[in-house]
Image (cartoon, rainbow, N blue to C red; front, top):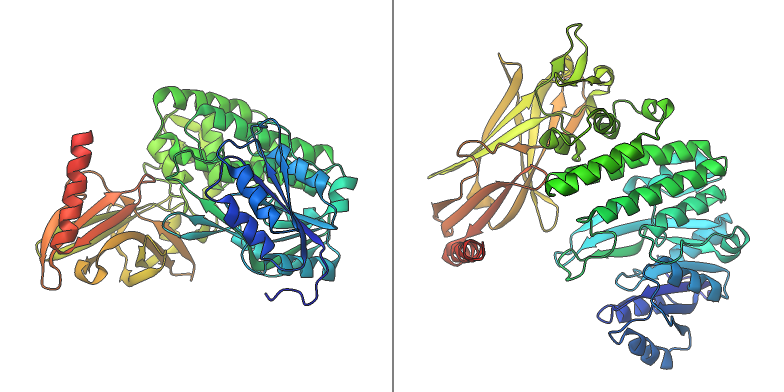
Length: 534
């Protein structure tokens, strides 16, 4: 969106940073470049030791809109410097920016126009998570920002509790101050969860815009991961549950019972699923500690919480964690926690015919799956890619799920290979699903590796049913047998082609292809380095 013509300086941007000399200049400039509507940029340096504050001082010497505030002592978190910024703001509106992120062009103009036209106290827009160095982007809570909307009360859109970011929003400064809305002080991870809950509890009018207003940089290869990304230590799980619990209590105590319930459902659907997807990667000590803490947290849920969406994967996972005193069935839990969810066999029943998690866990009933919509069923599809001298062949097997799939009638599956770097589908084919006597359906097709070419390719599937429903599924890679072997193939186009089907951390089937002698040599050298290093 174009900048507001002749806009008065109404917006302050609070930029916080600590030891981020490599990126803080870009962040500050992205705020200053928003145009005349930005009357002040308040850069709060949290006692950096890498020269960040000096960089900010040099920028401020040539830019009257930039003010630098230095903390005498490092606060240990993001909340205190943001509160410092709130206290320093002199303009009607404020928004927040982290020193390693960016405001895209026109972001402030877009938010300010929506705020002034609607009179909203809070205006929010689309944020993308940009993975670096690949540049691949993932929209954050895209469904909330599909179209422009004015929400008179947050309870009218309970899904707002899923947008826990503070940075993709423009706030009226007097709204924050009149309601005493601040961030937790000191070293408090996930401080934005608490801030977002305080905002919703104050019942603002919210304007939503479908435009991109924030770029969140995710640097997983960084020497020091951000606080929120570093989930390898059990302290992170404790911090996450503490923030979620406090957010729930804020909403409950404000009388926002619908939003409070939605926050508990969000924990099951987001936090619990995310950490369970990774639990198999942790050591046994971590798993036991994580499991015990999760059970203690979920013990606070009541019958209404569990009944809110009984067939949802997060609900089933939470009930299993409560039922089992120690970590069990981690591969199966990982698959159900994945997006899209998959419930792997075996599919057990009680002697009375009631579907349950397993014979060992009959207390976790799965009867909600019997009435769950077809497109929401956690279907399981196995995949194997067999390479041979002439190319490769993809074999798929769809599992039955307590009779629901036979009832829905799976007809075909569309297989798409997505470029890992861009996320775009490059090649697709629709195959008929053939029923076999053991209660599964199969499909098979040749894969033209030469046409795919070099890169990393993720396999994504959509199952089509006779009633017109469809279900996106991620193929579960078979790890038994010869299915994941690396093979060099002759190629008229590339001379040689190296194909390596493999299982990702989430268990999905992906394919890595290297072309030409140089590409094959790079892969071989990388393999050798890993073997020597191991």
